[in-house]
Length: 278
Image 1: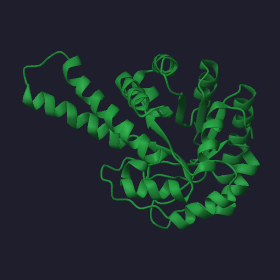
Image 2 (image 1 turned 90 degrees about the vertical axis):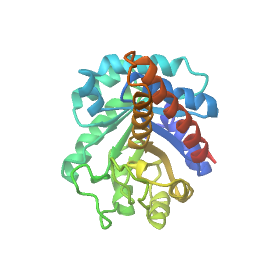
Image 3 (image 1 turned 45 degrees about the vertical axis):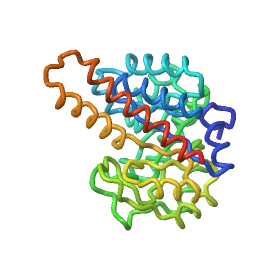
């Protein structure tokens, strides 16, 4: 494992102090602007995430990544740009060429041995380029209906996976699910504590939109470090747009309603970052 990378420095420090670092997904350019604005207002670091789904939506990795990197570099706080849930190894190579700060390679669709082999190869490649890598053991978050109360990451398996692959952070299954639109999930805090004790790298919580404030605090206190949130912010963005359009159906300039969504994300980003860091 590499310890002098931007992501590892940020997450290792947070892991030591049992604080959390917010990682929020960019869908539109306004997301990146809003998330960074929220981080600046909170005076806290943040991670901007670009998923493979986002890349497909924009028709390629470079435009949205380059724009997001420009916004990150202009910020007065530490902002890292991370590729999220990347299955296509060609996108890993392109991300390395673009100079992103970190990449989450998602080999969860592979069997264990294949996941280990692919992840180890990409970890070596990323590290040679000075880029951190996150991986996933099993399927964390309900993308294909796999996530259920009995689906959890075993601490011994997690420790062995990290040792075999050399990754810098590990996404684990502890009770969350992707794309939840209600904040009613609960995490297994005892399991998080055992994972934290067994795994020598920061733990990543995917699907955190489904957690209440109390559950987010509990997850971080128990040992989760990188907290991924997307659907929750998208919901606020969409509701803010709808409110403007419902009140002013004559508006046709998208800046006049998209700005409301951007403001909603900025305010919630600042609040969540402060909550996670407490």
